[in-house]
Every structure is written in C-alpha cells, then in structure tokens.
Image (cartoon, rainbow, N blue to C red):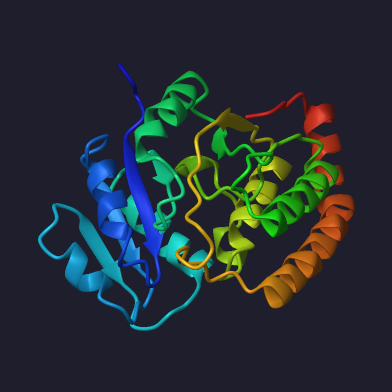
Length: 246
C-alpha cells in the first residue's frame, strides 16, 4: 500500500473542448482532482460544472506557472504529500498516471516526469527542437539527464520543492521547479508515457514561439549563473558534510 497521498492538478486556460474529458479520466484514477481555471474566457467553467472535482478560478489569466503555484499551495494546505500535474489539452493519457505513481511509490523523494517520445511522427518539430535544447541546458545546470524536460505530466513530492516563491508565472516555471529541486539534491526520474497530438488547427496551444522561447533562453542563462554561484558550492557542501541526494 502506498504511503503517498496523491492529488491531481490540471491547470487550464481556454481548453473547454478537452479539459472535462481529462478531468473525468483523471477521476477514474484518483478521487482528488483539482482544476485551476486560469482566467479562461471560453466556456471552461460551464463544461466543468457539476463534476466531483475542486475548481480554483483565477479572476484573470496569470500564466501556467501561477496556476501551478496556486494548485501546489492548495494541495499542501490540504495535507497531500504528492501532486500529479497533467495538461488540460488532452495530449497526455490520464490512464498513464499509475505508471508515474508506481515509480513515485518506489522513490517517494524523487520528482517523476512522464517523458514523451520526441521522435514520434506527430510531434511538432518546434516542440522537438525546444525540448532537446532545454534538455541540454538542464543537464548542464543540474548534472542530471532527463529525456523530456518540458513535459507537464509529472509528480512532485511537496516537501521536496524549493524556491516556489521564486518561480515565474509562465511556461518556464516547470523547468525552474525541477532545477531548484535538483540543486538541493532531489533526483528527477523519467518514465515513458504515451502522447497524443491533435492535427494542426485543432490543437489549442498558448505557447508563443518567439517570446516564450526568448524567455526560456534568458532563464537558462540565469540558471547557468546560478548553477556556478549557488548550486556548485551547495553540492560541494553536501559532499563535505556527507549529505547525498534526497
């Protein structure tokens, strides 16, 4: 029997066509599902009405990072030990959540990431490039290898998250959460999962190729400085004091 107490967080912004199905399938896996409606202007609220889930609504769109912080803080206040995050656009299979939970039960102090197949035929090319670019920087910044640093399908152990107040409000927040945790000795483990990408034109994406890629590049530059000035001295201190990975 698992000693972890899980809940599922689904951040959403204008995903009215898919979010209800994702939430319904998530409920089949775990009874505690939290949807953070990040100021949606479509009928997201209506399609979720009546479902046996917790809905937290932002008065305006604040970004995925802020939605995650809202959900994580709520989950921590309710006594959950681990949080599963899954995107609302339908690309992930909620039925794969037990795969991540199984790995989390074996290694409860690790962050578990559902890694997509970046070479699949329907993976958008810009996603593949951006992910490989991000994977390179993550390994440089943390000395840990991960095959999919941009996957939003994860399990976070709440007592192993660091610098939550520092995390930015948009897409790059998920990378920051992993990097800050890795700097404090948390291992990040990848688990292969399935992925479904809708045809171009049907897929709802709020990723802005130029500006979001620019923000991620700036963030990676800053994190590299942080790795040298903060993470490396901290790692040496952990070696000297005999404190290994968490």
